[in-house]
Length: 89
Image 1 (cartoon, rainbow, N blue to C red):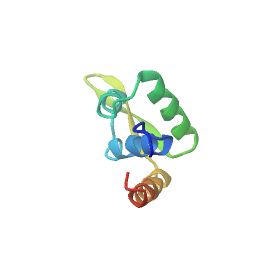
Image 2 (tube, rainbow, N blue to C red):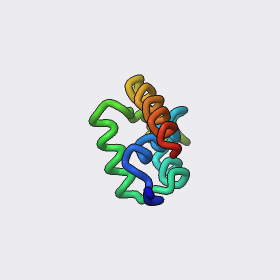
Image 3 (cartoon, rainbow, N blue to C red):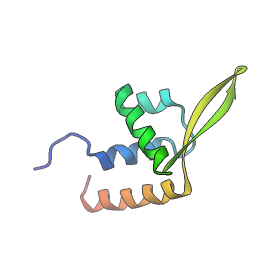
């Protein structure tokens, strides 16, 4: 029996899925149900591995960071979906 906690690969898949059309950190935080420090760690890791990229968008005269998967990240997301489907997760 597998526990109900999300695996690291499920968390990465969720971040990539939620950011596929571009997402701000607060959107990822609440829609993905992550803690702030957990999300920070994953965002840093995924950016470092060139799986996720950070963009700055103008927002009411200021700049807002937006996250989007890279081409490598989109391929990785498809791979994650296939693996999770095989595991019925």
